[in-house]
Image (cartoon, rainbow, N blue to C red; front, side, top):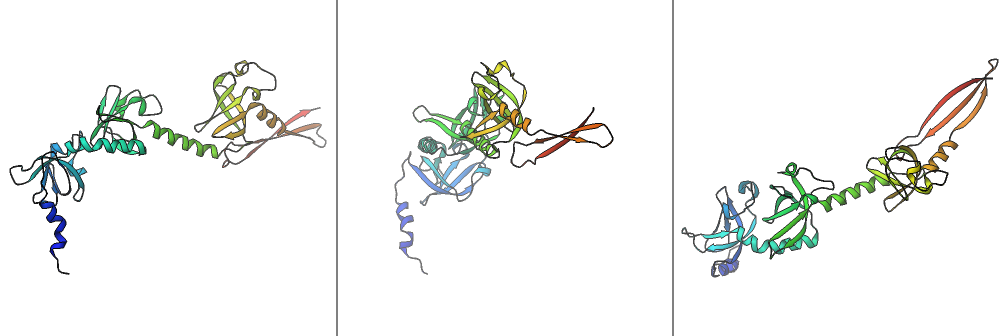
Length: 314
């Protein structure tokens, strides 16, 4: 099919467009090396972005990060660099365009993959849209971070926590993402628990209203004070101490919270011990057979039955 002037109308119109210093142009990468990036601007001249004007991010490598075909926006620094090309700065354009994008990222709560590029007082530094962002140590993990140097050059996922264009302030956070992941993992673990099953746990804290028991595998549940023992007590510390090993029964699961009972576990275990008296002929011995069934707290665990014999002479 023969080409006509109509096929080149867009390019022709662009070629007559007057470009001024300070304008922001968007072009397609046609070449990139360690010194510069060259853009096709659909104009009479190509755009040149020197390496130092492409990114101020520490450790940024054009050869690794920039590819032919990428679309890049940059600010016109000079209409002629002395070689017939338009001199551009992506850094300058980013200072203008990035803040609007960062505001959008905050509102959408999009999860961003970044690499920690520096360690500063009270936190670390990472870059988003070419803008230096600060991640406070308290936003790096769900636990206390003692040494932020451990995060240097590590990839992490963050969200935009706060952005202020006028003050050039960008705060990032990994904590909310980690909290959501931990909650999802906990829900999956809780879904494997079955009401009525008995397990052993460790008392991890005592409150006026009951005791929290660590069941292992990242799960813990509450034994209400009324479910600790048969006798009436004023406070759990009368019969329990932190670190005690206790048998508990899962009595309820609601909104991810696990309710436990030591009292019901004791009652159930007592009922599961059956005694059967057997007389051995001509021996004068009576045997008591004890059958004790132990159940695992997880649906996937198999039930185990232990049988033991004790003999008594009459």
